[in-house]
Length: 310
Image (cartoon, one colour):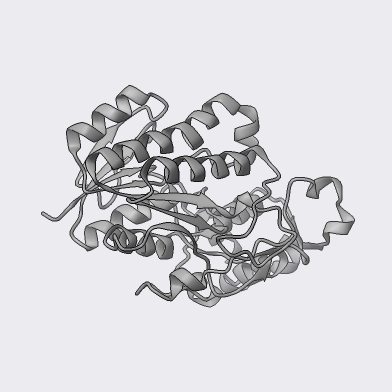
């Protein structure tokens, strides 16, 4: 058995991909879950921990004594952070700080996943050292967590800000294309903006980056990772629909931010990320949008609807 990885958020979109990628590279994967009831593919062991409980987190990490800690756990939906500010503060800020302190104590590698949401979307493309200006509570919490983990374990830590993610989650409800499918299967036509830009990649691609970083202790600090293409929300939806041979005119309505000012108050216009520094030193390649599409599957909850269309 290889080195030992303590992985929080192991049942999530990114976490489950990290578990599979780490096992392929012969890591012993301790998958940390909370309420998830299924099996985590790639996990060597699964442990159920309340990540809002500092004592429980500390006990588990010290008992297992991992070589690396990856924090892929978060309350990542901005509306959920607004609805549960105390819990999201605990999980999005306090818990990463606890893990950083533990990593420092153990001399373990620590990879913490952050978000493009620390930016306001008005000065893209963003480099890692650019000033941040989050427009929602989730973004502010991710920014606060970045500071905390660097403060407590600077020599062990690498922080990676991630873009909008696609991929195939265990529940079929977590990623960008899965949310589109869910709306379409429910009979809702989605309004997608031609002037709102993101630079997406898949959770699987991120997972390869994360595992490589676990093995590259020479890389620390703050970095960005994204796909190679900046794509409008409208183009994303159209290309997903075309890939799955769906009737895009029936499913997608073209829109503009100017047409819906109220709905754009908490949405950034442009969150392109400059990933040049990290891409230049890793073996993992950035994905094009077409490469990303080739990895996507019809989400499990939408398969009956999809078959009926055919």
